[in-house]
Image (cartoon, rainbow, N blue to C red; front, top):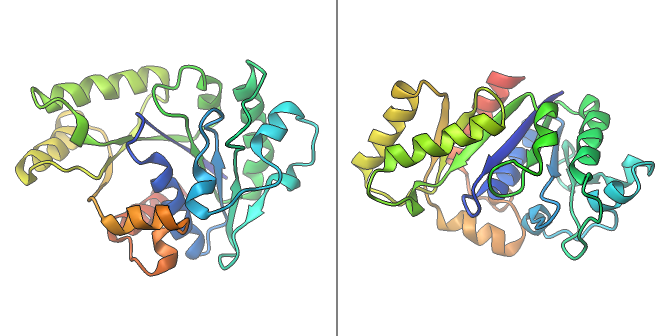
Length: 240
């Protein structure tokens, strides 16, 4: 019954982390739901090679529909369920995210863990979802950050997400192609100076990118997601 929102700027790897962390949790016997709340550019289905018949967009347009139609159980992992989006249809209602919030409340009682893949960027329009979260994870990719002052940039980014989200956010650093000393400095700054919980750092791994292109999470094609698996285990220990 724990709901976690995965937030962050575009391209930082939120959806990749949701798909792989969720797969790890389900493989460990935790009944897990992955919900694609990116109503404008849904991409979670691509990570599993799935084009569902019924999507979260159908619920947005018709909140009275049977929510069982939305749930897709991934073959091979009995405890992993997906609610996906329609990549070709845009929602017509400006209150779409309120409907998604209602859907979360309907479904959360049936799962041990719900991971919500947020739209890219600050949660301004999807802000109605924040009240339905128990925890918020902010994914940061330091690679694209201006080199002038990495820590100052990260400070400002975190401040904005806290202002618009939960009072406390948990941090994941993802695919950081920066120097080892610079990365260690950033990790120490987040954990010690800012006092924020750093769930872990996921190194850049070509195998994970390959898994995206094949539509199968890395965990399912035999690529052991070491850092991702460790983060999934920590999430289970901390939040369940």
